[in-house]
Length: 422
Figure 1 (cartoon, helix red, strand yellow):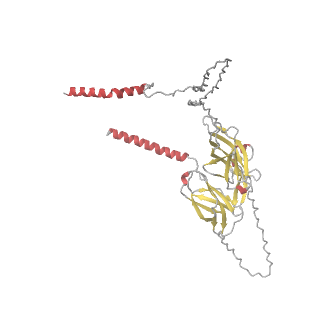
Figure 2 (figure 1 turned 180 degrees about the vertical axis):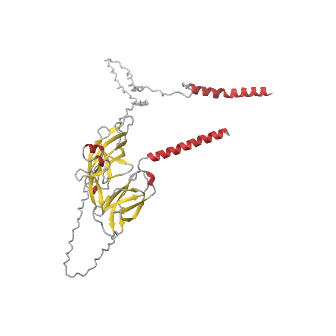
Figure 3 (figure 1 turned 45 degrees about the vertical axis):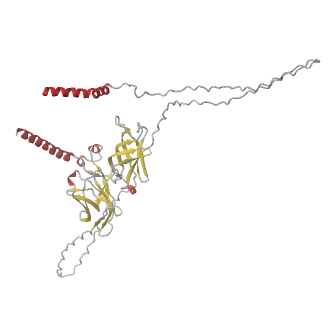
């Protein structure tokens, strides 16, 4: 029972620890990736007028010290038509609402808009996103906020708004005519012209995007980042290049920073950004798109170098080739001996001389020349015979000995056991 209670207490402590850890992690987790909506806008079946916008900058302590803004404006957006680094929409704006979260107003230009939905935490996951024009009418289209590992871009998300409500006219009181004894000339009311606000032009240029991050090299080079540079491309626009510094003890991982992508022209808005690593494509798991507000972004790139690595030739030692001895047949030659004639002298005598026998010529004796074939040294085959012992390791020798004497030891042990049992 005590053991069961101890295990239950340990399990309870672990459960509470995991629960509290998950709560703290959720509270301290980074904001989820935003969703970018791009498309056309119609209000009451027609294209609305362009938005009016102003250039602003964010007031920080450094800018208060430089007298660009007042201390009372610290932490707010201050208008500056010359040196502002961001545009804000003032009228004819489209905003996205997600619970109590309201996005920055989207600027409408030529009937098109771009709005970014990015709440601070993941508590809004699964909630409905609505789009509102001038805080008066809601679009027929809506979406659901889902957290994903990459920035979501929906380029053809068109919004259809109903017509703006017509303001109800306020009836004015009609004065009662009182008869006057004499006709009095009533002065004519003078129409006071209404001041028409000047529309601020929509920004024509995009703001720069600063990119930093890591590059993972997959290839055969030992030091792949020496003399290599990284650059960005959006359509026909090419950015400047920055060096990539290798991380020590990692080998194939490098870091870069300060890659500025500033195509300026709005025709590049919403297009995908491609990266080049000294002639080799550097890809990202999640595509990066050019946004209107610019800013800073951190990415992870991967480079696959398929260039074959040169392998030095391997020196192959010469192999001795056995040449079999060949016997050369030399035909025997017979040497012919010419016959020798024997001269018989004639003696002058009256007496008859019996005829002298003339020796017959000896037949030719053939001479045989025996030529011995040239002796070619024979190369003995190398290699040990089947019965040639070779050195083995101690472990192999011990195993062989056990296999040899194991049966004898087993029989002896068995007989001793039988004897003790009797």
